[in-house]
Amino acid sequence: MWALEENPQLALRHGRAAKARAGRIGVVREMLGVIAYSCGEWAETLSELRAARRLQGGPGLLSLMADAERGLGRPERAIELARSEESQQLDSSDLVELKIVEAGARLDLEQIDAALVTLEDAGLSKNGKGEQAARLAYAYADVLAAAERTGEARAWFESSLAADEEATDAQFRLDKLA
Image 1 (cartoon, rainbow, N blue to C red):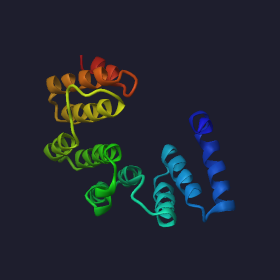
Image 2: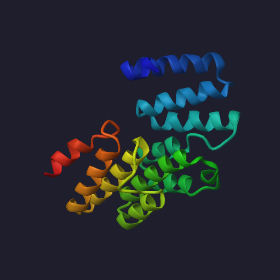
Image 3: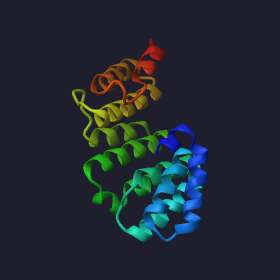
Image 4: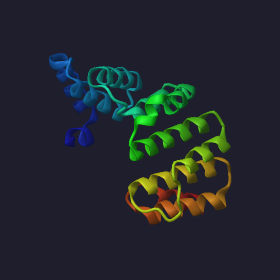
């Protein structure tokens, strides 16, 4: 994936070329969907990930699909995906990612309390460790900051930073709140 990090547009062109040659192979469509997501091509993301799921089965990458719905200005659809039966088939780490996206969609709809509850239900902990705990704490802090609950937001950004310093820009957000 080095090409994606260094030159996402080139990676997208390569992904589209791969699809032109092997469009009936699920992993090719999934790869193109992930690349399109990285490039902010929301409609293409949805199209490709839906195709990959039809070809391969399973609930994979539901969080990317829900986030693409948000990118298209459809937070209600993101919430529908997060609440779908398919979401119950996700493993715990994928489910946490989906809950983070759902909370963002609820924030888009100005449903602050629902966003906070969604993240709390995802296993939020001030003492969590690792990238996933950091991302969950960061998302919670972000919602609190949007609600202008600055003191609480600072505490959760600090929890995010303590969980994994590299996973988020929590230090930047703390500096901004100071």
